[in-house]
Image (tube, rainbow, N blue to C red; front, side, top):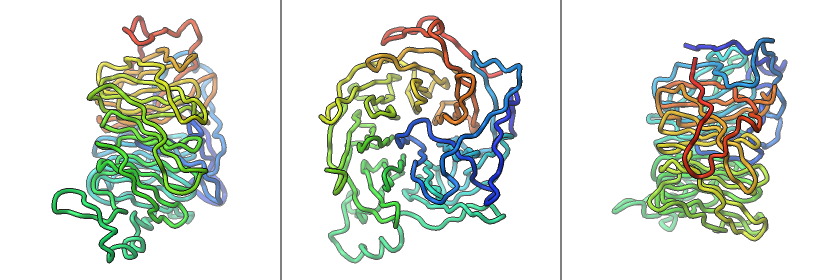
Length: 421
């Protein structure tokens, strides 16, 4: 069941070559990021090439205030991740419960999936969709250009070829727990996040490792013992991969001269005994923000090529844990276990100023995505997925200076609160 409030037409005509992926959007940042989802900027002969989708809206639409546009229902479980793919929105819950929604009507276009347990992350590149699962596997789906419009499962990671090439040699096995070993190319627990960057796929897991896969042949190249607890988020930008963990640290990884194995470049420390659940990085790679289980969003400023980051802001964003974040140019959006979405504007020196709160979900907000191609009237579209099993679509305006409250790091004062109609 879909509820549209009010009707805003996102027109995107089909491509003559395919009825599936056409007129794709760009991501909210050129960096590849994921606490739950990611879209690559890789270019190939694929339906994910970057173009803009025009919007046709009613004349009475007010661009100066927040609006709820749609409530998308249909999942059997909590919505765990989102991805924007052209005129389509992908949302995932359980392994067999991945839904493709088509704009402008936001109707169910297709469903696909495989496996038990929840889908933890989505990533798309070229004509492929990568899904990370609770069963510690990454599944690879190819988007068909035929009239069937199907998502065909074509592989899983690690691939059979990769497995057969390593399983006979004992040195390829690592201890995962007492009296139990696995190949180093296998994750030993749920895969929580994916990101695609510069021809590589990065996967983070509750098994505390960061694995690197080559996009061209899906071969596992590296396994890094990255953290002392579960990895909850990944983002890659300007040659640096950031991993956010339940151990309260964000770590920066890079390759010497862009080649070879990844090595640790820096550690961004959070609050003591607080988990980092989400991470975002500004488009220029200068600002890093981590969302914590204590409701704080912490910000760091990078100092160019010196591989050092300085803590510049600590903002009490929510009363409960921050579960997800996304960036849209100067705006940062944060989703929380308190069921709300905070809208923040990035100011000088990385400081966050609160400009609004979105309420409407009946459960914790687990994932967020913002659409840069839908900007009109100075605003953008924000998509949110929740443990209440729904996906909601919001209009977020560009707030003027008179509407912005300088929240700093202390108490929230008067704020713009918006309720779902």
